[in-house]
Length: 137
Image (cartoon, rainbow, N blue to C red; front, side, top):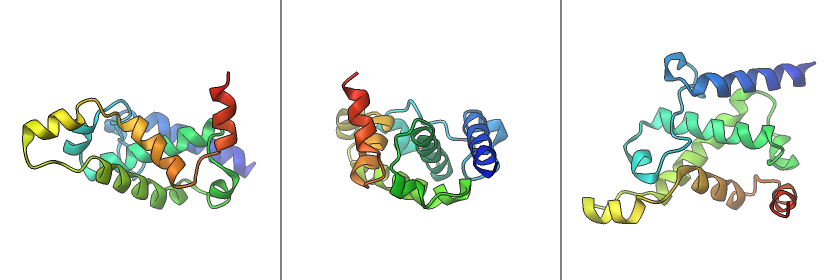
């Protein structure tokens, strides 16, 4: 029963996080799911963390997080340090260049979701077998 309650809470969190009007918890109000790096650079830290929480929740719901990672997750708040780590990693990947033109040229085509997925794999959180299986379909 607790697992069902957890998934319900997580699903509702993801749904409410799409609309910033509902923002209140750390995982609510993320709007950067389809953003590029330039939008990410301008976003608030709380928006970045909420968006990364959403990415992790979507990976979990999709069966794309490994058992080792999932064994550390028992509540929605257990995702927070990982969402912070992911947001910090994306910040590092998209570090702003001093010259505006150089910055735009470098980052205009970089997608936040792609970078988040790559970092989830680099950090060892991804269920690589499941990802590979789906890639063959």
